[in-house]
Length: 154
Image (cartoon, rainbow, N blue to C red):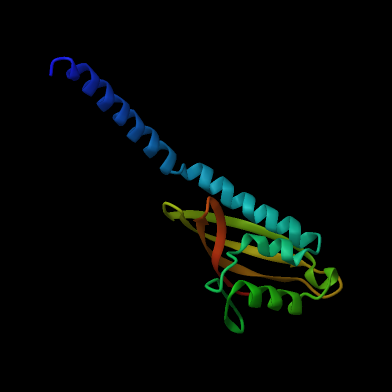
């Protein structure tokens, strides 16, 4: 029994170190989460501004449970949301140049966040559009994605 005490102490120490390491890995940094979310929006803006709606949509959850709420009410699902964007913005001139401002990123829980902000589309030939949005994001498989989007226009 006396010979087992050092071994048990070593095993307990290793188990304790493992638990601390596991907690460090599983608890995300709020600042890293905020940066990742802002980067997602920056990537979406770049895709939009080059006329790439499918690229813009990569920031959305590719699920039938995605919800987009606009002036015509809710649209459910990634594919219908993509189809609506393509119908409403058939070419680069209609899409214009997108800009987000006043972003307020709030972490709601581990792996969940919301973003409130303002959007503006500069469209010289079709007239500018602007409004506000509220996004709900989740971290799914290590990637932040928009799971709900409520966007209005003024």
